[in-house]
Image (cartoon, rainbow, N blue to C red; front, side, top):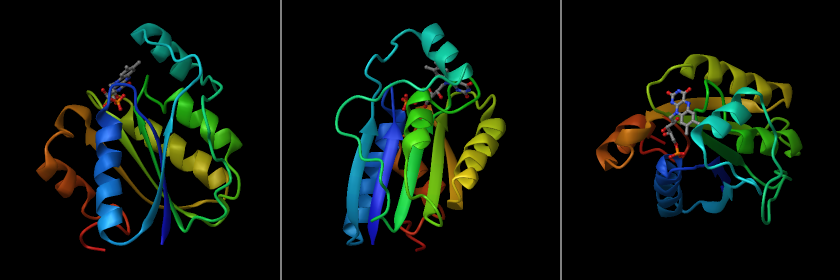
Amino acid sequence: MKVALIFYSFSGNTQKVFEYLKEILLSKGCSVEFLQLKPENEPKNFFKQGFSAFTKKKPKLAGEVFYDLKDFDYIILGTPLWAFTLSPALRSYLEKAKNLENKRVSFLFTYGSGAGLNKAIRELKSILEEKSAQVESFASLEGKKVKERSYLEEKLKNFCACSSSG
Ligand SMILES: Cc1cc2nc3c(=O)[nH]c(=O)nc-3n(C[C@H](O)[C@H](O)[C@H](O)COP(=O)(O)O)c2cc1C
């Protein structure tokens, strides 16, 4: 199975989760493409970050970014919850992503207090459904707990085809 792991992470929490997923997938013999999104002009200030998320900005992404998902069997997307919504980097990516039709997709958020989480989940699900993706599952993880392996195992055990329960 060929899996795309595509995510944005500013302070490292979402990245930690994706490194865990990568490790699990590789141990199951999957082939993995790991794509960490980064805006060219990434705001470092909390208020600018929050504003750009809240106003649904779509910044230009830096580096080599693959947008054509034709060759993947399964796609996992991840983002921190920012201002009750997804990060601008993931929003930009999804605007340009191609061949998501009928693709199996799972997504996850990492969050702080959890304020706005349900709204953000609904929003990302609807963006994916507009692209005719087949949303398989979603998860949400508390950012400050993602360093605990047992927390990752517990939260992701039924998350995707790569989880321990299959
Ligand atoms: C600009 C900004 C806005 C945030 N907005 C929210 C929010 O609306 N709700 C929430 O629960 N957490 C919010 N958080 C907390 C992050 O979602 C959380 O710390 C996340 O795990 C960070 O992921 P990262 O380390 O991968 O960047 C916000 C953090 C930042 C920097």
